[in-house]
Image (cartoon, rainbow, N blue to C red; front, side):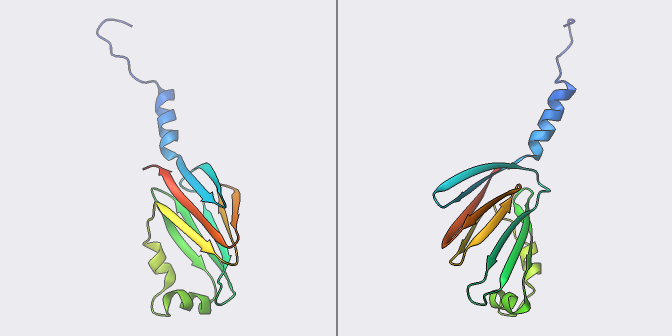
Length: 134
């Protein structure tokens, strides 16, 4: 290197750092098993289950931006009223949520799709933790 010149990171290093900054590392735990997934912030996650009181299906969708966020729920009006007491719009409340950890439990069973993989729990829980970014 010529005298007086300072080495600077190459374009490849900057691209690698940019790519790594987009990766979200998520831990999924349930049923005595643990999995680690690398996701992008625009990937959609979903949780599907039957409400044990109404017996109707519930679908929750969200994304792993800097926290688990961008939540949206899909269900029938009776089941939504079960969760909200009929007092407020559920999706408006969910849209404000930002969580680093989620725990979903179900007596009837639930399915979680994250990063193209399905995880299931019957009479138990699934726990998700966003490990990176911290």
